Image: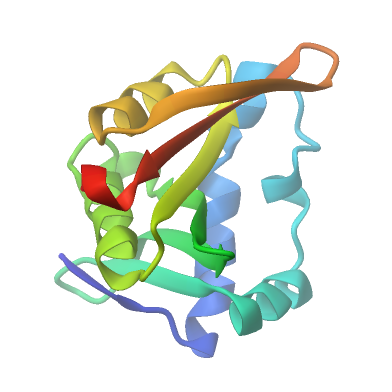
Length: 153
């Protein structure tokens, strides 16, 4: 597996992988209108201009994972950690997040997930992220925000 910066030509494949990977989240919350399932290719192109988008590829060059991050005021905001459903639990998400942390000059890292997303919460806490805020954004959907400081890397 190799992790590199995504190219514009990768965005269609990354978006398809995002749609696949977020099906389990949609099912968990019984809501198939969550933002990752509604994002358009045009919106992803706009995000590409402002963010670091990494891709994980397998031996054949197929994209099997991706992550996005942007830095603002010393904080790297990490989002859309996605791994192909057939490749989850193999350390790909961990490597993607670790790469963002290594390549960023941020002093603080922040990400979020839904309160029912136990696998995501376990991963983020395993990586040293600490919960610092919860926010209800819709009926039954509570986002858990986690943070980590550069000194904790």
